[in-house]
Image (cartoon, rainbow, N blue to C red; front, top):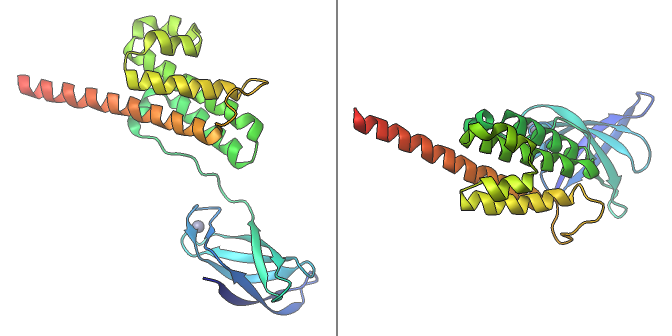
Length: 227
Ligand SMILES: [Zn+2]
């Protein structure tokens, strides 16, 4: 459904400008709270025939930001094509994962930051590095005696030789293949992209979390049984 909102604004010299009509077809995604929601247009500044910058307010988090426009030649209405930047959105991980590898969480967040800044050539390398910390910290947690050895080994070797859980092993292996692709000159997995790499990392996180939670419940209930 197309919505029309009338707003008054200003010229570049600060003079009052007449009403314009803003045409919005879809809810916009707020650059601050990242919700897809209807925005309240407050005013505008005119930069030329096609270019009004609209001051918008998010109806959810109440932050204000700018919407950049183009103009519909048939109707003369303005349409928002881009929003100014707000805050970055980083994934939240459960306590068990943060306790297992706070470095994974940190690097993953930095890779997301790079991705949201459109630094597409380096965010893949970041996700690959995050994966390495996740797997190695997971392995060190189950084989503390082999810490030095695990930290020195190639990631692929760790996955092949040290992971016992078949689900984690298979998924982590595929994630590493795609992750390595992000660091190489020639891409092997042409039909897979960053989205696939992130999905595989998230499935790996999921399986590791299931294993950690299973262990916690089992040992907790076994302990209580003995009492
Ligand atoms: Zn918001």
